[in-house]
Image (cartoon, rainbow, N blue to C red; front, side):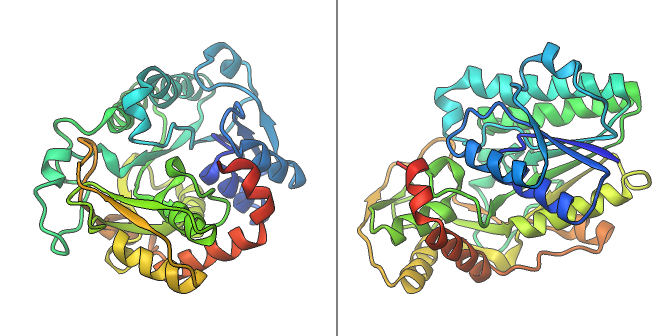
Length: 334
């Protein structure tokens, strides 16, 4: 099986490409990435070492995309990953996260390729998520997707609907994974990369942080999944896609891997032996949510899969990787 991974020099894409290559899943693994993001060149070098070819193409460039070789499977990891960025850079988010998927689907239809799409937990209604009582509810695929969900979330949900239309029209087999917070080694400690790596990096370097929104107390709760567990699941989906397909499922760390920012701070203080100043900003972004925990029931039932890495394991892995690569990381993290 020949596999193309879009966004292959990003955090998820690069880890996934290397995982599939090392586990001999697929006869050929290629990457597509325009190398525009800070840190993508470092991941590009990782792929090069494992003899994974990257096509330096912007996913919004349909002409360049269509002349690429045929693949049996396309894994679409390409996205502008920051919800808050989608407020300010609507055009870039729209062209990457929605038009990019449209172009991938046109290639899938032409080449009769199957598709695994990395969607987001942010497809769900902000209004309804804000009504939830903490620690009493896990989000399943049946949760409300109606109403505002951020420009980022809108593009992801619209992409999901577009995939279903193309599947119906061209008989494309697809899997849609609505992923929550992912973390692990090779995630840079920047705000748009994820709060876990940001928190660990700031503690290592004794730099300031802020609890933002919902009273500024750090009480927001998220569940977190290790990149290894994501790669493991996708490898199972690849192996079974000829028989198990056209499904949408939530994927995350679940209740066992849920944590508040306040508790994350305690873990970071303990692991780094550093205590940093954390300011409080009470004003809440209209895109922020106070609580999200994934209900993995569907994906567990279908693939007999569950997250293996605990939250503490995730923080430990991020810390060890950052300490080992501190000098290199300082070139990419401002």
